[in-house]
Length: 173
Image (cartoon, rainbow, N blue to C red; front, side, top):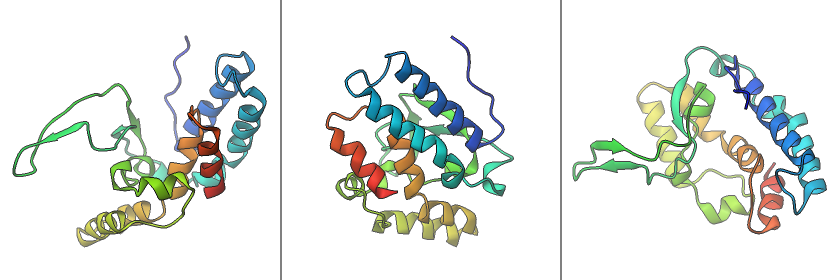
């Protein structure tokens, strides 16, 4: 198997990832029960990569360690909320500032997100305000405007139990 990357931008990484998914669909290794629908959806997503991941200063420079499944159950804390350990690193990767500091899934109203709602939750607003209060308006902006990135990533290679899930994510665009 050929290694993917390293990548110089989030746009390049997203394009290569979707191209890999398209190849797997064409070789009947992915979405075997709905290959035409899946291929068309991922072809659409490939065309939208540059719109979703705008190339800007947040996409270049430093890269950060990120856990793709950031719903919070991989971080163990003590009674004083100090982090004692991080477990389950099988989905860890490096990402740009734009990809790393987007709101963690644990702060989403999951039911609304799965229905394609495009509004920021109270918890995510609080996280954005915390970043801004610490002088990081760029990180606050990433949290406030990150829904489209989350929706996009959920559509890429997502294996929904119910095909309606992926349709809801697409509607969120």
